[in-house]
Amino acid sequence: MSVEITDTAAAIARVRSWENQLPEGERLFEDPFARLFSGGAAADEAVELLLAVPVFRDYVRLRTRFIDDAVRAALAAGIRQILNLGVGFDCRTLRLGEIAQQGARVFEVDLAEQLERKRSILAAAGIAMPPFARLVAADFTTDFAAGLTRDLVAAGYDASVPVVVVWEGVLGYLDDVACDRMLRWIAQVAATASRLVFSYPVSRFDPEDLLPRIRAAGFVWLDDASLADVYGRYLPGEPPQGGDLYRFAVAWR
View 1: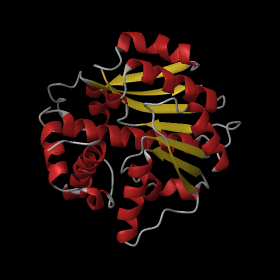
View 2: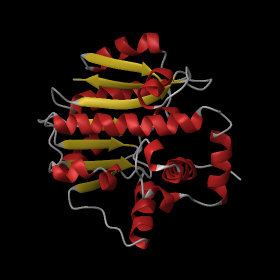
View 3: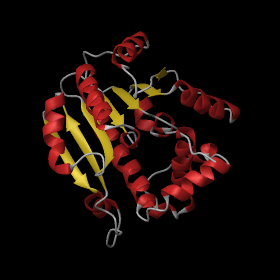
């Protein structure tokens, strides 16, 4: 049985759904929608593969909370656009009440079949995407830039005002050329004072080389932290072994 991107997205949703099984005081986030996307046998295989890395569950938990907080901080700073690249089965649009409260617009981007799968699962549960959300299809492994820019603008995206860009769990699917191409495109469509929040494995970006790559793409500042550092912000005790495999970052335009 082969594991596809949709199966991996379901596996990540399953890991997020486990958060609700913890006592309320131990949860890093609330996600009542994740259980809808737990998938079937193929997702079982994907979960097994992902959890073969012992630190992976903590990584998913921490990156979810880290990005939640970065989005909240952007909203508190007055940013009113959210661009979620490679959204998968992420449901921040539904579960972060601050988005609706602040009147923000959300643009969710992924493969067309992934977006339709998400929409149909939500619809089957009687849940509709809110009117301030737009789903826009793109394939980041192709020469996507011109078409995606056009489609975002048609959906109401305004490149002249700041945006917080979420780039969560995407880098593992891209080679170096595609990663740098995406960074340049993000900088082109993100106005001054925009923010990019992302997670990455050190197998994709060398932390020592990330700042010059970010600056070369058009960003001016970077806050980069290890999983162990972020673990200390949110959880008691010592971080698990393997905490040096993943990192979390926010870049500013």
